[in-house]
Image (cartoon, rainbow, N blue to C red):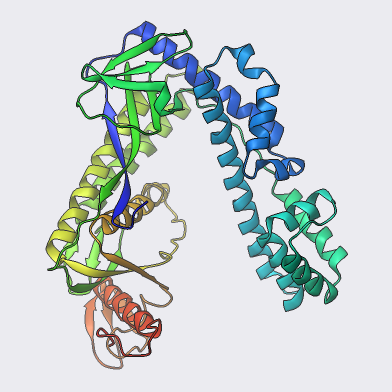
Length: 448
């Protein structure tokens, strides 16, 4: 992708309800798509399939020879997308397993630095990792093999490899999907026309026509999401959009994130002040609906109405978040935004209502949308460590005290709202981080 573009997800919707028979044909594709993915999960999710999943063409050839596609009568354009979609999930799961094991190695105080280095090397080199797990001869390029032999000579390699196998057994891959309302479609599986889209189904030379709310057409892989109960579909397409640059975006802004007020800047400007109200409404509704469902569980109550209302309330909240993020960028005109890298973890409260409020906090969504909008507007986003930023004075860096929502520093007498003091600390740490990372050694213009 060119550097002056950024990927953005575009959505398209049906203009009129999809006919029952057409929806049934699309559901057949989605159902077969899920079956193929589960078959791949089961067959290639184990350690002995590790050499096959990179890059995946061995799996593709074996799936072709299995004759599964012919038995299902599934179009090839969907079958192989399902195969590689499942392989992508398997690769992601293996990456997560490696990250978990790395954390365990780092936290293991009984290991020496050389032993940890040896294990980290195996986890980093795919061929070495595969060979250790399946106990096969190590096949590495000459330079990597020399590095492996050097590290192995400094430790008890056999014992550490057994340790690695035990760790992998603790975190087995258990992939399965029950989702039968979604599938991917390559460009050959559809075409735009007549203010709508024609989508291929299992019938040869037949396509389902879906009128769309817009006349835009694209030539790329799409994700088709079905809503059978409503007779609706949603098309999701990754498109490249031009990155905008603004000459007047020159400020450096430190930002603290909160549950009640979405963003607070180091200058005390607040955005998304109604976020807490929207989230409280959603969390209270979820709590009440869960209680009602548990009381009537034996009566097998339907969940369609619940899912529809939940989706509507979440979309309303997301719309407000995006609106306030846009206002934040237009008003502040930032060149650089400093945000905490890891938001402060909040413990469980003594009241269930508080727990529901915390669980419904759209923290991840806010961060992902802010990152996307910064990429689109050529704004640099700098993440800083949030350690002690809520208790440290932004003026003298001493330890302060909180009196309600007010931060007070006994050393210098500085008083401010806690979230403003936090945002000021975030900006200060971000400026220091930029200065220390300055490559040519010249002071950065924003050095505090």
